[in-house]
Image (cartoon, rainbow, N blue to C red):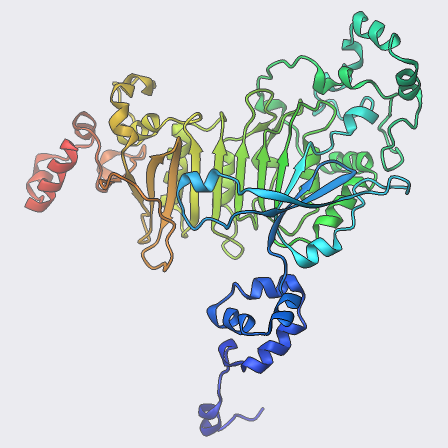
Length: 523
């Protein structure tokens, strides 16, 4: 292999995308799809200027129609809505948790006269001309309540109420059912009253359809006590059962969503569906490699699952969990934080996490996550973590960081809620032990807000605040005190005495360190 002379190496010119002539850019843009040109206009000022300087007819031909939201109402109808407001540039909590307003633009229906019509939509023009940034799937799999009988699941993961629903119908319901109109009786007895869009197969038996008022989702709901020991897992055998249950219907919807990239999927339940396995949602998510953002809104069911055991967070930019007030079937605990920390560095992404409603997360869970983040061998960046105060109050969390192992608490931080007004406005800083990065904490709009900060970043995710005071916090491990080297902390005097150094070590402190210690103790 011959080596190039030094003169030729020096004369080599490296071209960048900014060196492309305007004429060439115009030729490229005219050959692109409208959605590609719409996104290209948002890349940089130069590309935006080139597209805007085109004549009106050419510009309207290559530009798309903006951003939109897609609603999958049911297996028969889909709606496209255009956003009526621009995306917010603010990073305040209120803007982050508020959905953008949209207006109706068009809808499409599946042709029920065709075989296998479930979720058979023609959305080619929508995906070509619109930047669909949200896909709402309402009542996913709700039709299983109408045309499905008792499911045959493994006893270890089958909820008891799943197969006993038929036996729970009382005599009054049976009388009212038999006394219904002839039309309703005929339709309910007809095996073709509700077409499923696919033939039934496998070990799933389909019973006759029942009236709407007798559906499990219309019955009186009882509170479910979460039991982690009996949670279901998406095993190979369970995946095979769900595949037979789907019979190609949910796979057809996944094919429709493959055209949208990146995909923000929102599951929203409006009722309680006993005959829809909770694992069906996460089995469906495995068929969406383009998924980047996920929202689980009020998911209810009888089948309990632990989120981190059935959902992989690799490649996820945003995860929003909104728990219902009753019959929550998704258990959210410390495992979801560990899952984000364990993502491979080669595919790690800055994520956003929002948890609303009551979960198994407490102040100790958040402290453990911050300890693991500070001690992690690599930097784990993220944008923001929002925890609802209905799950963890700000006073509980601040007390857990300021009073680790305090003997006066007796494990009950509720005793210290008397000064919660001061702690609710407290700002804390948690520094990484190895790198010059940290986590900022504050409480705003009913959420505990954790934001990642790196001084080297050009753009920072910050939230405006009224109080400017912030405190550096360090956690203390269970190791002997002599081996622990605490960082700056605002722990109270009675707690600081637990970690107080001998007199010989105190004499070696500088005057500046004594002043800082005095300021922190009086804060």
